[in-house]
View (cartoon, rainbow, N blue to C red):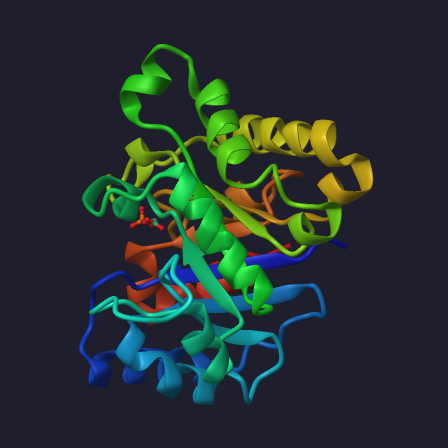
Length: 253
Ligand code: PGA
């Protein structure tokens, strides 16, 4: 079975102590993950070592970075490189979140480079894509997401693309409480998989996990994750509450 992933995205929330307490509360639940199930926590940079130390003791639990630099090293004050992440055993990095695209001017070309940096170092990129409300209103979401994937990912080889996780996150559903319906999510996930198949063939397309993000909650995770092409979620708000994220992990196929 394809990898199924419940990914928490803490964004710029929680103090170190609150983050530690949240992880402890979730781990205390002792949810045993099957071979194909993974729980990933994208935490702020200063918490990565603490999170990775706690999580890596459990099967298929891991910490993730929320971003990395497109530069390998050097005079880039305030940046964190993929190599730095590798040196503390971080295996996942969220890239191209819509908040990064909107507030930090990230674009498809620089994201292509960031994705390359991660792949070079054996870090799995969780590559985010998704349309805004104005694009959805004119029914242009498929071509918009297609351009995001083509410009950032479609230069990779079969081998490289097989190491990527995609997160489809319609911007109109992020932090708004407006979730895409399970049908809307499935429709876009199927479209993404079709695009992958067109470029890389059926086998590769079938192997790539596509997560849904945008107001995933304890109460809707099961339904969303139940769709055939939805392989888990990237979860913001609900990942900050232990009881909620526990239910979201338990909703994985
Ligand atoms: P949300 O955020 O679950 O709070 O909508 C999702 C995300 O931005 O990854």
